[in-house]
Image 1 (cartoon, rainbow, N blue to C red):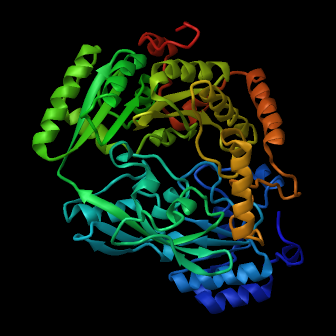
Image 2 (cartoon, rainbow, N blue to C red):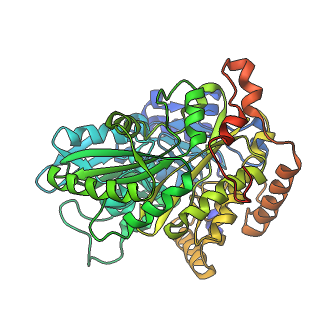
Image 3 (cartoon, rainbow, N blue to C red):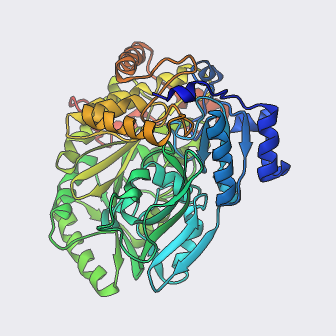
Length: 536
């Protein structure tokens, strides 16, 4: 809900507003070109033009600020007129987190606010502008023998504030915690243009009142615009990836549970990739390795003598479960490839992950659920990749192929809804909201919690200008609330429609156009990929 005062605002980007933006930024940093605005109307997942029926997803203007003061001035102008403000990093997410729903002003934070401000080796922190690419920051730290605790798997292109805004899970998180655990301080522009700091650069944030770092971590830009971030860094030591092959993906369940319950082992990263994934990689001409069925990747980090002890223990655990250790060059290659899971797009197919978390104790059971979900929803199977987030949480990211050029391609999102429903049965849930899954908030949180979140949004953003339509208040351009009841009905209808449609065969559909050899189903089944119902 917005205030009565807000109801009287124009909410229009007029020529006068454009002139004021040009005064703040200079003409070169204010873009109203129709073609350029179209490029900013979606994120990683291209949308068919029909999506514009529901959302006003083309911004009125794209601006490129380079200072905190410029961002604050833009937000003050938007607040005064009730104009939507949408912060955007590199848009490597696929749920519409940086997609406008009410046009307005889109802030491209990656163009002018992308620098490493300071690396403090004594106090062990790095301070960056919000649009800084993770890889750029990590390279600065690594030159000094330091390590950023955790980061997104899309680190070569993702921005720091973009991942923090989703409260992401990624490599390094098993040892050092997820996005929010490594934040020391942030500079944030509130909806009225005020600038605040959420913590401290040099010391911990404990016992200092409300944890404002946590408030903006995961807010998806709905409470304020992150403009600077201070993160913890750690001594790097050595990094040693270990790769093990398993004939069946489910067999990894035993060593995974032994590792997470071990009193001393704390790998940097624990991940897996299934046989379908490697077949698709080979089909795209990416992975030259032979003899990989299902890969278990455990990456260690720290002082060399301790890493050696951990490796010996993990070798023993995996061998007892039937895993075979692979050559070190395979492990190094797969560690280097950890950010390129979805390069199967090179064969001309749209691919999108369904991200869910479940309890680690149910890891093997949920493998069956993933394969069965591909079957039930008639998907053109992509692959199952994922990682262990912490000692109790497994993150599955099964990806699938979809047609990005037609509205029917949107029906493929039914798989995400279906898999999210299955995750609930294993103590888990879907991950992320954006605009497409904002209604899930009411499903994964109890009522009093979501009421509090919406009250916070209204209090901090009474004019509803900060990334409206996302996370807590999904709404179409016609003012229809995308609440859990409506979206639940839509989810059921989408899943029903997907089950009635013929089985996807997008790979074959693109075979002739992109000149690759189609994967033979017999070859897949010959590797004993077992569905949840026991069929192969």
